[in-house]
Image 1 (cartoon, one colour):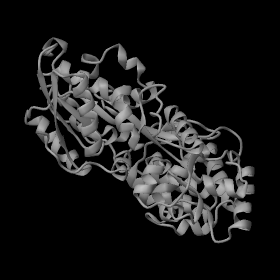
Image 2: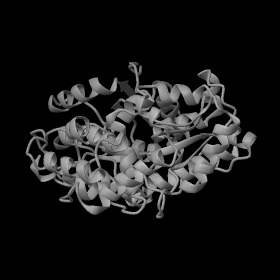
Image 3: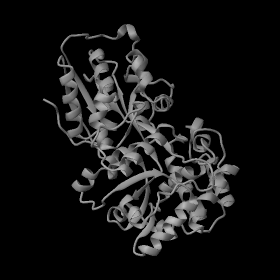
Image 4: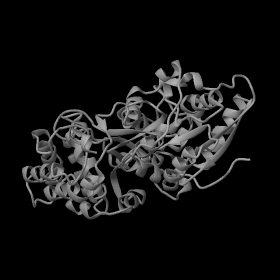
Length: 443
């Protein structure tokens, strides 16, 4: 019997992508000669994970077992936060587990010493997995070894739009700041009760907006600063701050948006009271008519695109691989576990779990099954989001204490006009190098 506990929500997965990787554990993994195979024999594999939801996992497992009648999958699911505590304890205690889900950013370094390196069990099929997602999963590990194969990735910022409203008003989906300004002015004129553009004004989100705009002209800027030796007061970052502020100065976004907190932006958009809603790909479920119906969201049609290009360049998204699947070193069913992981990341499994729209699948060239998304706006939007996330301009990475205590508020100071971009950038650089916020090689 499968053990049934609560599974992750889309919001929990999104939060997991922001958690910093933990410290490494003690322990070791044997070489490929230690791997015990189970080719062609009946096998039962124990699978622990936090994602995707229970009903989705059950459907994916049923599809796998139908194709692999000699393999039975016993499932145990956890809430995301509890899983971060329970899995390392179970692995260090030698519990019999054959496949584990790994929260790539939050858990890789806390469990990697109890896992088989992926090169001991992957084959030629790994070449079909998006190389950027594989590289990100590899680089998260302190020793830069691949331990899990990512199911997909999440990215931000993306701009969701009320496709039915735009069609009603005769507005094209904007791709530039000039087009965005025309669309906003038309919405204000024809629907004065609608807020044209919404997103959260909370400090944490300002980093997403800043790099989503700055990297339109300076791809890799976030990696250079947060993951490298780049300075916060460099010209590209200052230019990005000024460009971000320009969408307020030009009347595309109202400063009242900065007072929006929590779920309020989503509520406004879902109620038809906002035309454009900027968030991350964990909101892709809004593209599904079935999801909207089930959740009482009375929007006729929803699309998604990248942020319009503000001052030249190309749309930019930071993204991070998630939903890693790995094999514990203690597993005695490595071949059966490998078959299951291969199924989950290839089309057979993705056709089941990708319908939830939480992750953009890691399988190169993957397309959703017919009927998951009904409208042209939703279908084209998901493809646009997938393309951007599959080739991100930087890793979706943060130093959380610095973001919440320094960076987010410094960006807000610029947007509110209480600091210049140069002053805010100097403040961020001074704090970044103060030693109070370990980062990169300092960690």
